[in-house]
Amino acid sequence: MIGVGMRSTRRSLAARLTAAGAGLVLLLTAAACSAGDDTDAATVEVFTWWAEGGEKAGLDALVSRFTADCPGQQFTDGVVAGGAGINAKQVLTARLAQDDPPDTFQVHAGAELTDHIDAGQVQDLTAEYDAWGLRQALPEGLVDDLTVNGKIYSVPANVHRANVVWTNPQVLSGAGIHTTPKTITAFLRDLEKLRKSGIESPLALGRDWTQLMLLEAVLISKLGAEKFSGLFTGETSWSSSAVSTGIRDFGKLVSYSNADRDAMDWPDAERLLIDGKAGYQVMGDWEAADLEAKGFKAYDWFTFPGNGEVFQWLADSFVLAEGAPNPEGTKCWLKTVASAEGQGAFNAAKGSIPARTDAITPAGTVLSSYQQSAMEDWRTATPVPSCAHGSACSQAWQNAVNNALSAYSTTQRSTTALHQDLIAAANQFIKQE
Ligand code: GAL
Image (cartoon, rainbow, N blue to C red; front, side, top):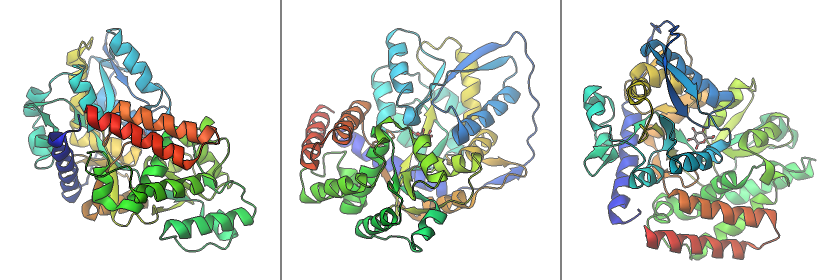
């Protein structure tokens, strides 16, 4: 629910996660592990949407640690491909409804996790937090913020940033663009320049949830951090002229994107950038690790124009599912996710920031320059949550917004109709929650 109580919890969660970044110490250590070779191992089904590229590299790094740390336990991959869990969440919902839960599943901290707690689908991990010393390892207060009715239900693995624009600098310089746009107007001007230079669809865009990321970034620019966050707590009206101007700007930005966007997941849109068919893509910072994993190192990035010092955060976490077939093995998975070594290995590959303050990166690992800059920004920037990635809004609200965006993108609807849909969704879910 997004009532007054949750409002303060979420704000405070972001503040505590900021503290995590502030205290971040990455140490180098030798990875002291050897792979297990259990033939009679019990299995732990880990349900994620990390199927390829940098995402899979992150998961693989966790699996290696799990294999070393949890003898007698074997990882079973419950992956369902599709960025932001767009397919996985549907499969998960169906499985949970049929009493067929995986042992553990990936879930965003914040409103999305609250959905699962309210539905009684995840188990209390309070005793494990104490046994594993997690109260000390996670930043001061974060544990308080993860606590719902005196219990803690998930282990956070990382922090990602959503409001980033990725570029193909070669394409930009081909059109004479050598500076970073600081406003949406300047961004639109550069998109027009690119189009005139022969890049027909200069803004690489994908399906619904990627469009929501673009819309959220625009709204951050129009409203600023506090009012943007208020859109999801009921403190900021969705009916204001600032929101309608934002939606019109969003429409203009979409007009510079590829017409086949609704059939594309984020890596497909990313491919347009890599291949020089687009100059820009708005995407979370898993893109840096993914571009690196795909061998495209000549990328650049900037914070979405007009977002200033705002860090739009989201955090992946893992839970012990209610009715998990192998709770003991799952606890060992969760302990690995929670460990300093697990967080170091995972985040180095995934491109995110560890939730722990004392994560240990594997020996010889060099963090990308993007990642280093993100850590610095996390220490200093103002955090706001993300609806596309579950920290700001419930799953039902997100679904409603995604549907509205799809309807806008696939038909000739006006931005006024889109605005009406977004107001209706906010009215429905703010009232309900
Ligand atoms: C987010 C998730 C990230 C990344 C991204 C793209 O929702 O938190 O870890 O996987 O989706 O799939």
